[in-house]
Amino acid sequence: MPSKVTANKAITVILKTIATLLSSLIVLTLALILIFILILDKSNGKIVSSGQTREYLLYVPDSYHPGSPTPLVISIHGYAEWPAHQMQLSGWNQLADEYGLIVVYPSGTGFPKHWHDTGHSETGEDPLIDVQFISDLIDKLEREYTIDTTRVYANGLSNGGGMSIFLACTLSNRIAGVGSVSGAYLVPEQECLPSRPVPLIAFHGTADPIVPYHGGPSESFELPFPDVPAWIEDWATRNGCNSTAQPLPSNGSVSGIHFKNCDQNAGVVFYTIDGGGHAWPGGEPLPEWLVGETTQDIDATQIIWEFFQQHPLK
Image (cartoon, rainbow, N blue to C red; front, side, top):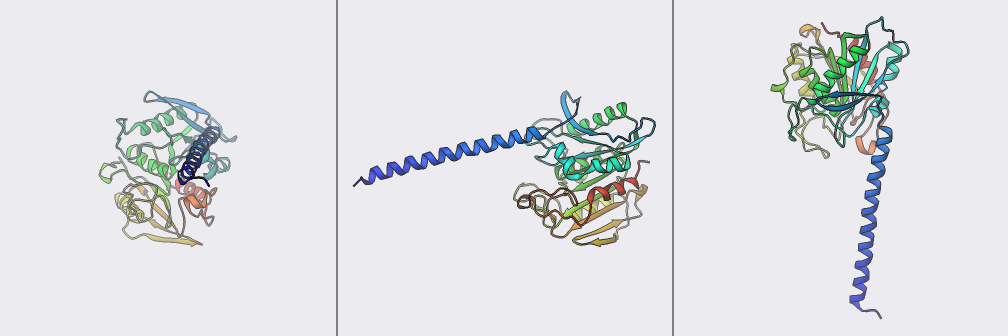
C-alpha cells in the first residue's frame, strides 16, 4: 500500500501540472485573441497627430464627385473595439452608398484600444490628444476631398459615444451634430463648454450591463456613469430646449422622446430600448452573454443620419 505522504505528493504533482496547463492555455488563448484582432483591425489611412502616427479606416462611395460638397460622418468605435468592427456593426457604408456620404472610422490608442473622453489624464498624456487627432483628421480629409464643412458629424458606440460627446464639447465649431449609442458620458458637465448648442441623438438600453441606464458603476467598470435619462435632460437644458419632451412613435421595445424649440435648432432626441443591452440597435449583434440583447426593432444608423440631415452647421 502506498504511504499517505506518497499519495499527497502525487496529488500535488498532478495539481501543479494542471495549473501549468491551464496557465499555458490562458496565455495561448490571449495570444490567439490578440492575433485575431490584429488580423481584423485593418486600416487604410495614417496621419501624424501630436507626434504620433494615428490610423483610420476611410470609406468613399463610388458616387463621390469632387465637384459636389460631400457630408463627412465620423464613426467612433468603443472600448476594446477597432475601426473595421465599428464599420461592420453600424452599417454606415451602406448609407454612404445610398446617400453619398464619406465615412471615416478613426482608431483609438493603447491595448485595448480606447479614447480619452473625460478631459483628464492619469498617465500624463495630453487629455485633448484624441480631440486633436480628430481635428487633424478632418483637416486632412478636407484637403483630399470636397467635404461640406457644414455637414461634419460624429457618432459612436460606448466609449466612442462618450468621445462623440467630448467632440461636441471641444469642437462645436466643426462638428454639426453628434449621435451616441450606449454612450459612456464621463466628461464633467462644468468642463463641457461648447461654443454653440450641439444637436444630439442618443440610444440606450435599460438592461445595459456595461454602461447602466440609471448610472453608477457596472460589473465591468468602476466608473461614475451618470443616470442616462437625467443626463439627456441636462443636455436639452443646455441647448435651451423646452423642458417638456414630446413622445415619439414607439416600435416594439423602443420608445423615444424629442426635445424641441431649442436654441439654434439644436434638438435633442433620445431613444430607450426596453430590455436592450450594450449594443447598436439594428446593427450586427454582439455576443448576448457579454452585452445583452441587440434589438432589431429600429435601425439606429438610419435614424441618426435622418437626424443629421436636419442639423447642418450654421
